[in-house]
Image 1 (cartoon, helix red, strand yellow):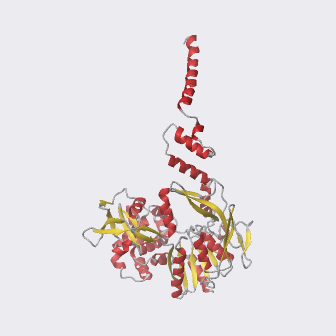
Image 2 (cartoon, one colour):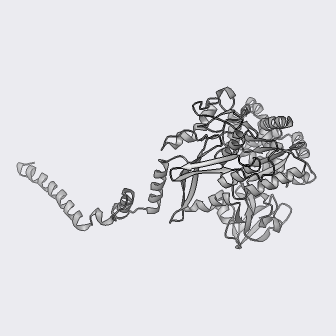
Length: 530
């Protein structure tokens, strides 16, 4: 290259850059043109992306990502709920939703009805467990494309609307057609209640929703009519829910003036909730069961009972969620659940476990760490924050800053856990086999009246052998030592699942599943001393 071009080429390149800058300024407005006075930097960036970014942008997706990122820097429980999920989230807490009223499973690319919800539209039309849904509104509704979300969105709908479903029933040579008017379907949060022992009532509460207190009152009243005068309240696995529901429930057991809980936040002055003395079970002995998945409202219940020395807490250290959320609607149809306060048990302890802002993964894995360190199986490994000590009503020492520690520890039984059991659980083989067995033997189960009869039938059947052969056909072959180590756990799961799928009495599942439960057994022993 000669000297002349060595000089000209750099000049041309510089000229192109300068020309590009001038063209850009001439063609496009300055960024300030898209920014309103007083807008935040977040609004400014979103505005710039909307108008200036080189490619097309889905602003809804970008906005949602920005909101989720902001909330993640606050605390682990402030969350964004997209519009598509909001109705289902609210339904779970409202106590009812509008639909056809069935519980289902997808078996061999077909929607199979496992149970028909009592009081729902399908029950009134005679739809039965074991029925297969093969069409909806005249169109086939089978195939590998089916998903739980698709089935739910199809069968649920506005109250009063109609949906036509085609049913294949084993006893009928031809498909059956039903026109169902969608209606209110109750969402039960008191999952079951029954006499666990003479004079001892058992109540399982899965969450705290709008109807939980009413369901709870009904359960206690019916058990009382069966001569129960002491109660086991099972809150294991209960993630919480409405604060008002748990306050009203605890009120049933406390004397007038006893503190239930108090809340306080930067913008929310302290608010005390005390028992009003109207409870019907103020002198009734109770035991509360908790575990590592009992959180929020469950911990308020357990904390109020423990701090007032009102009853025993049995199980394992609870989750440790002491934050209160308020749900706020957004203009795009979504919502935000924002932490607005902390709650404190009667002794003054906040049981919220530590968290680092912006690090939700470590927070979520904290329960896994408990398992790794042996806390779920060994009482000596339980971690308590000795620096946050408080006194109960009668002067006992309790600790805050990391969940409710039980008065009586019951470790998690992990003796049956093996790689084989984990595999068959992850692939849903226990549920599949249980439903197939129940569906095949329905006529036999119709003659049984008690859960003991069902259990005896299942114990006599060669279920473990049949199941392992079934699992092997599905590609899961286990080593004999692992199968035998997990045998009791496998049979417990199968017995209870088959009872659930085959019997109309919904208590049978829990009666069989809880038959050898160590925490319930200890609770019965403690209550028998009263």
